[in-house]
Length: 162
Image 1: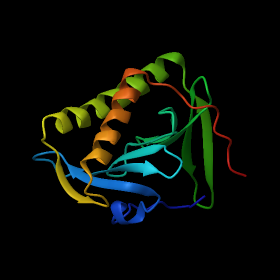
Image 2: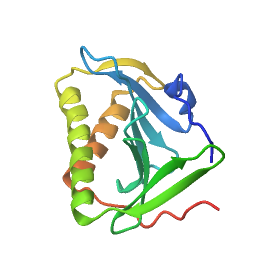
Image 3: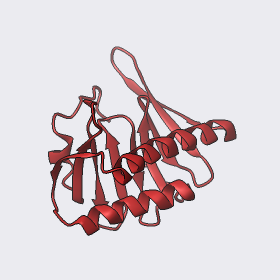
Image 4: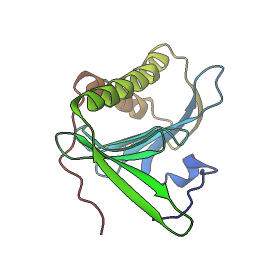
């Protein structure tokens, strides 16, 4: 685990695992949204660097990053992983979300995804960059988000890395 994280300078360029991928901006805002599909069919969406949501090919939430914490699916809830720094070490503190915390997390996620969809449906997103110019690809991405909003689910437990 890195001792110090750094903001990525160009998330669109670094997100090479997302094919196709897009970079958008809401009107009048400076934050940038980077999103796309992974090879296995899952998708990811980044609001700058926080929040970030990663979904599997069935649209189930696998991992997330929000308010400086990492989250990973435990199947029935999410595990929150928070870094605690000391002068010489970094610890990763783990706790499972309570049912109320999980409901709040998923509600906030749905609100953010719905905001993207509303701007998309109103043709109000400004596309900054894309690796495809096929309207069918971005429509497929929008449809995936509609499914996630309608039926938010968690992926099976994500096995921690050794």
